[in-house]
Image 1 (cartoon, each protein chain N blue to C red):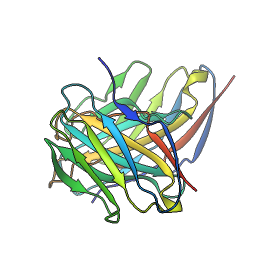
Image 2 (image 1 turned 30 degrees about the horizontal axis):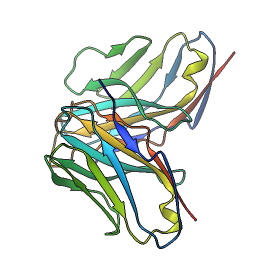
Image 3 (image 1 turned 30 degrees about the vertical axis):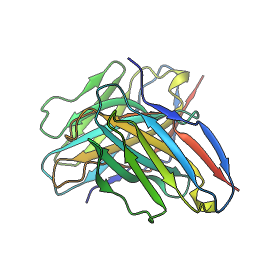
Length: 114
Length: 116
């Protein structure tokens, strides 16, 4: 069974550009969550999608957005990139939304903004 | 709101010895799940073990066990017979049943180094 796949693995962008990251969850999983990891702030929740609907959003500016498709694949978009957006972006896949459901992560996309 | 505290930024352990990584949590929810993840330098978060708040037995998965003390709100990870490949960052996380939020709340992590 394939794990969570995130593409691309590495990305270098210039300030002001926009970027789209992709996450393919484990087959059959309907919940996808995104997290940003930086050395200073640690792991911070971005948003969660379940059945194509955003269920929860973290404390991030509107430049960060996402969506989920009918096959549960998810994308997140960051517009007008800032240097502080440089981070490892992790996607987590869960079967359901219950608290006792395990969450499996992808390898992450490492975004560098120059 | 939930909060996870990991007070050990770094830990060293000799190969083949056991090590305990500390985790305390704070939540007003009665139902919640506690998770431990391992993050090697490659970046991937690897799920290790899960403990539910109503589980009476401590969770075990191979060399990993979770020492769950509900009254103390602690969920320490015990790694037995450490291996060089265990060197990584370890994160404690929780997810609560209450409300609509289902995201994981993470601690700041503990960097474990296994010495040969």
